[in-house]
Length: 254
Image 1 (cartoon, rainbow, N blue to C red):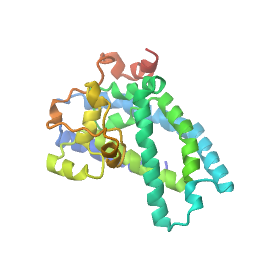
Image 2: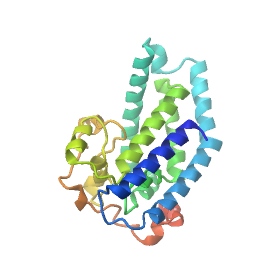
Image 3: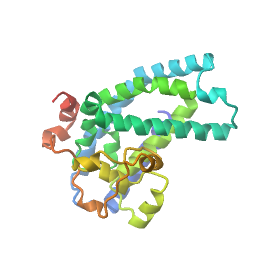
Image 4: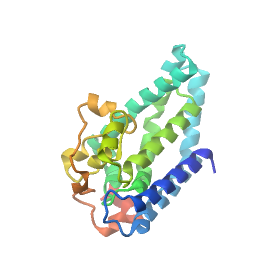
Protein backbone atom coordinates (compact mmCIF):
# COMPACT_ATOMS: atom_id res chain seq x y z
CA UNK A 1 0.00 0.00 0.00
CA UNK A 2 1.50 3.35 -1.05
CA UNK A 3 1.80 6.44 1.14
CA UNK A 4 -0.93 8.27 -0.82
CA UNK A 5 -3.46 5.53 -0.03
CA UNK A 6 -2.43 5.42 3.64
CA UNK A 7 -2.88 9.20 3.99
CA UNK A 8 -6.35 9.14 2.41
CA UNK A 9 -7.54 6.13 4.45
CA UNK A 10 -6.35 7.85 7.64
CA UNK A 11 -8.09 11.12 6.72
CA UNK A 12 -11.32 9.33 5.76
CA UNK A 13 -11.28 7.46 9.09
CA UNK A 14 -10.78 10.69 11.04
CA UNK A 15 -13.56 12.49 9.16
CA UNK A 16 -15.94 9.53 9.51
CA UNK A 17 -15.36 9.56 13.29
CA UNK A 18 -15.86 13.33 13.50
CA UNK A 19 -19.09 13.05 11.50
CA UNK A 20 -20.40 10.74 14.20
CA UNK A 21 -19.38 13.09 17.01
CA UNK A 22 -20.16 16.46 15.42
CA UNK A 23 -22.62 15.95 12.53
CA UNK A 24 -23.82 18.88 10.42
CA UNK A 25 -26.90 16.96 9.28
CA UNK A 26 -28.10 15.10 12.36
CA UNK A 27 -30.49 12.55 10.83
CA UNK A 28 -27.84 10.04 9.74
CA UNK A 29 -28.49 6.55 11.17
CA UNK A 30 -27.22 3.97 8.64
CA UNK A 31 -23.82 5.53 8.07
CA UNK A 32 -21.89 2.30 7.48
CA UNK A 33 -24.53 0.94 5.08
CA UNK A 34 -24.47 4.27 3.24
CA UNK A 35 -20.69 4.37 2.92
CA UNK A 36 -20.03 0.71 2.10
CA UNK A 37 -20.90 0.94 -1.65
CA UNK A 38 -18.66 4.00 -1.89
CA UNK A 39 -15.73 2.10 -0.37
CA UNK A 40 -16.30 -0.73 -2.86
CA UNK A 41 -16.30 1.85 -5.66
CA UNK A 42 -12.99 3.24 -4.39
CA UNK A 43 -11.48 -0.27 -4.43
CA UNK A 44 -12.72 -0.78 -8.00
CA UNK A 45 -11.39 2.59 -9.12
CA UNK A 46 -8.10 1.99 -7.31
CA UNK A 47 -7.59 -1.28 -9.21
CA UNK A 48 -8.50 0.43 -12.49
CA UNK A 49 -5.97 3.18 -11.80
CA UNK A 50 -3.21 0.83 -10.66
CA UNK A 51 -3.44 -1.67 -13.50
CA UNK A 52 -4.30 0.62 -16.42
CA UNK A 53 -4.65 4.36 -15.97
CA UNK A 54 -1.49 5.08 -13.92
CA UNK A 55 0.70 3.38 -16.52
CA UNK A 56 -0.82 5.40 -19.36
CA UNK A 57 -0.33 8.63 -17.40
CA UNK A 58 3.29 7.76 -16.57
CA UNK A 59 4.05 7.05 -20.23
CA UNK A 60 2.59 10.43 -21.26
CA UNK A 61 4.67 12.22 -18.60
CA UNK A 62 7.84 10.33 -19.60
CA UNK A 63 7.24 11.12 -23.28
CA UNK A 64 6.72 14.84 -22.61
CA UNK A 65 9.81 14.92 -20.40
CA UNK A 66 11.95 13.20 -23.01
CA UNK A 67 10.87 15.82 -25.57
CA UNK A 68 11.08 18.74 -23.10
CA UNK A 69 7.45 19.65 -23.71
CA UNK A 70 5.28 21.82 -21.48
CA UNK A 71 5.12 25.35 -20.13
CA UNK A 72 6.97 24.54 -16.89
CA UNK A 73 9.92 23.22 -18.91
CA UNK A 74 10.10 26.43 -20.93
CA UNK A 75 10.49 28.76 -17.95
CA UNK A 76 13.22 28.75 -15.33
CA UNK A 77 11.50 28.85 -11.96
CA UNK A 78 12.72 27.94 -8.48
CA UNK A 79 11.41 24.47 -7.52
CA UNK A 80 8.90 25.75 -4.94
CA UNK A 81 7.50 28.37 -7.32
CA UNK A 82 7.31 25.80 -10.11
CA UNK A 83 5.19 23.52 -7.90
CA UNK A 84 2.86 26.39 -6.97
CA UNK A 85 2.47 27.47 -10.61
CA UNK A 86 1.82 23.86 -11.69
CA UNK A 87 -0.82 23.40 -9.01
CA UNK A 88 -2.60 26.63 -9.92
CA UNK A 89 -2.72 25.73 -13.62
CA UNK A 90 -3.96 22.21 -12.96
CA UNK A 91 -6.56 23.44 -10.47
CA UNK A 92 -7.90 25.82 -13.15
CA UNK A 93 -8.17 22.83 -15.49
CA UNK A 94 -10.06 20.89 -12.80
CA UNK A 95 -12.55 23.79 -12.47
CA UNK A 96 -13.35 23.75 -16.19
CA UNK A 97 -13.37 19.96 -16.35
CA UNK A 98 -15.91 19.83 -13.51
CA UNK A 99 -18.04 22.43 -15.27
CA UNK A 100 -17.88 20.36 -18.47
CA UNK A 101 -19.11 17.34 -16.52
CA UNK A 102 -22.30 19.27 -15.84
CA UNK A 103 -22.75 20.80 -19.29
CA UNK A 104 -21.72 18.08 -21.76
CA UNK A 105 -24.46 15.40 -21.88
CA UNK A 106 -22.08 12.42 -22.23
CA UNK A 107 -19.94 13.56 -19.30
CA UNK A 108 -23.01 14.33 -17.18
CA UNK A 109 -24.34 10.79 -17.66
CA UNK A 110 -21.37 9.49 -15.70
CA UNK A 111 -20.94 12.42 -13.29
CA UNK A 112 -24.59 12.33 -12.21
CA UNK A 113 -23.85 8.98 -10.53
CA UNK A 114 -21.80 11.02 -8.04
CA UNK A 115 -24.61 13.53 -7.55
CA UNK A 116 -27.29 10.89 -7.06
CA UNK A 117 -26.18 10.37 -3.44
CA UNK A 118 -29.04 11.58 -1.23
CA UNK A 119 -26.99 11.55 1.99
CA UNK A 120 -23.70 13.34 1.32
CA UNK A 121 -20.81 12.68 3.70
CA UNK A 122 -17.05 12.06 3.47
CA UNK A 123 -17.59 8.70 1.74
CA UNK A 124 -19.36 10.51 -1.11
CA UNK A 125 -15.88 11.70 -2.12
CA UNK A 126 -15.25 8.07 -3.17
CA UNK A 127 -18.46 7.87 -5.23
CA UNK A 128 -17.13 8.45 -8.74
CA UNK A 129 -18.18 6.20 -11.58
CA UNK A 130 -15.36 4.20 -13.24
CA UNK A 131 -16.52 5.63 -16.57
CA UNK A 132 -15.93 9.16 -15.30
CA UNK A 133 -12.50 8.14 -14.03
CA UNK A 134 -11.54 6.74 -17.43
CA UNK A 135 -12.79 9.83 -19.28
CA UNK A 136 -11.00 12.16 -16.87
CA UNK A 137 -7.73 10.22 -17.03
CA UNK A 138 -7.55 10.30 -20.83
CA UNK A 139 -8.84 13.84 -21.38
CA UNK A 140 -6.36 15.32 -18.91
CA UNK A 141 -3.31 13.79 -20.65
CA UNK A 142 -2.85 16.72 -23.10
CA UNK A 143 -3.27 19.13 -20.17
CA UNK A 144 -0.52 17.37 -18.19
CA UNK A 145 1.76 17.52 -21.24
CA UNK A 146 0.98 21.19 -21.98
CA UNK A 147 1.67 22.20 -18.37
CA UNK A 148 4.80 20.05 -18.21
CA UNK A 149 3.92 18.29 -14.95
CA UNK A 150 6.21 15.59 -13.67
CA UNK A 151 4.91 12.48 -11.91
CA UNK A 152 5.76 13.60 -8.36
CA UNK A 153 3.92 16.90 -8.89
CA UNK A 154 0.86 15.04 -10.16
CA UNK A 155 0.88 12.64 -7.19
CA UNK A 156 1.27 15.53 -4.73
CA UNK A 157 -1.57 17.43 -6.40
CA UNK A 158 -3.80 14.35 -6.25
CA UNK A 159 -3.08 13.89 -2.53
CA UNK A 160 -4.07 17.53 -1.90
CA UNK A 161 -7.09 17.26 -4.20
CA UNK A 162 -8.35 14.02 -2.68
CA UNK A 163 -7.81 15.34 0.84
CA UNK A 164 -9.76 18.48 -0.02
CA UNK A 165 -12.50 16.38 -1.64
CA UNK A 166 -12.87 14.22 1.47
CA UNK A 167 -13.02 17.33 3.67
CA UNK A 168 -15.54 19.35 1.66
CA UNK A 169 -17.87 16.38 1.16
CA UNK A 170 -17.85 15.61 4.88
CA UNK A 171 -20.80 15.94 7.24
CA UNK A 172 -18.65 17.50 9.96
CA UNK A 173 -20.27 20.50 11.66
CA UNK A 174 -17.86 23.37 11.09
CA UNK A 175 -18.93 26.69 12.59
CA UNK A 176 -19.98 29.12 9.86
CA UNK A 177 -17.41 31.73 10.92
CA UNK A 178 -14.59 29.22 10.37
CA UNK A 179 -16.15 27.95 7.14
CA UNK A 180 -16.45 31.54 5.89
CA UNK A 181 -12.79 32.27 6.70
CA UNK A 182 -11.55 29.09 5.02
CA UNK A 183 -13.60 29.55 1.85
CA UNK A 184 -11.85 32.82 1.11
CA UNK A 185 -9.14 30.54 -0.28
CA UNK A 186 -10.36 26.94 -0.24
CA UNK A 187 -13.47 24.89 -0.99
CA UNK A 188 -15.29 24.19 2.28
CA UNK A 189 -18.11 21.85 3.35
CA UNK A 190 -20.78 24.58 3.34
CA UNK A 191 -19.66 25.72 -0.09
CA UNK A 192 -19.70 22.23 -1.59
CA UNK A 193 -22.94 21.16 0.07
CA UNK A 194 -24.68 23.70 -2.16
CA UNK A 195 -23.17 22.00 -5.21
CA UNK A 196 -24.91 18.76 -4.16
CA UNK A 197 -28.31 20.45 -3.74
CA UNK A 198 -31.29 19.00 -5.59
CA UNK A 199 -31.97 22.54 -6.88
CA UNK A 200 -30.53 22.72 -10.39
CA UNK A 201 -29.29 26.30 -10.08
CA UNK A 202 -27.29 25.33 -7.00
CA UNK A 203 -26.04 22.07 -8.52
CA UNK A 204 -24.59 24.12 -11.38
CA UNK A 205 -22.47 26.28 -9.09
CA UNK A 206 -19.34 25.93 -6.92
CA UNK A 207 -17.40 23.78 -9.40
CA UNK A 208 -13.89 24.30 -8.11
CA UNK A 209 -12.10 21.46 -6.35
CA UNK A 210 -9.32 23.08 -4.31
CA UNK A 211 -9.13 26.88 -4.53
CA UNK A 212 -12.41 28.78 -4.25
CA UNK A 213 -11.00 31.65 -6.33
CA UNK A 214 -12.02 30.13 -9.67
CA UNK A 215 -15.74 30.09 -8.81
CA UNK A 216 -15.53 33.72 -7.75
CA UNK A 217 -13.73 34.76 -10.95
CA UNK A 218 -16.02 32.60 -13.10
CA UNK A 219 -19.15 33.95 -11.38
CA UNK A 220 -20.25 30.43 -10.43
CA UNK A 221 -19.86 31.00 -6.68
CA UNK A 222 -22.97 30.39 -4.60
CA UNK A 223 -23.71 30.32 -0.88
CA UNK A 224 -26.80 29.60 1.20
CA UNK A 225 -27.44 31.06 4.65
CA UNK A 226 -28.45 27.73 6.23
CA UNK A 227 -27.05 24.65 4.49
CA UNK A 228 -29.02 22.38 6.83
CA UNK A 229 -32.06 23.16 4.68
CA UNK A 230 -30.45 21.59 1.59
CA UNK A 231 -31.96 18.44 0.06
CA UNK A 232 -29.11 16.43 -1.44
CA UNK A 233 -29.17 14.42 -4.64
CA UNK A 234 -31.01 14.70 -7.94
CA UNK A 235 -34.73 14.91 -8.73
CA UNK A 236 -34.39 11.39 -10.20
CA UNK A 237 -32.34 8.36 -9.08
CA UNK A 238 -33.52 8.81 -5.50
CA UNK A 239 -34.79 5.25 -5.03
CA UNK A 240 -32.95 2.96 -2.63
CA UNK A 241 -31.70 0.81 -5.50
CA UNK A 242 -29.70 3.67 -7.00
CA UNK A 243 -27.96 4.23 -3.65
CA UNK A 244 -26.48 0.72 -3.79
CA UNK A 245 -23.47 -0.31 -5.85
CA UNK A 246 -25.36 -1.91 -8.75
CA UNK A 247 -27.76 1.02 -9.08
CA UNK A 248 -24.87 3.46 -8.92
CA UNK A 249 -22.98 1.62 -11.69
CA UNK A 250 -25.97 1.50 -14.05
CA UNK A 251 -26.99 5.15 -13.48
CA UNK A 252 -25.20 6.47 -16.63
CA UNK A 253 -27.13 3.99 -18.79
CA UNK A 254 -30.62 4.85 -17.51
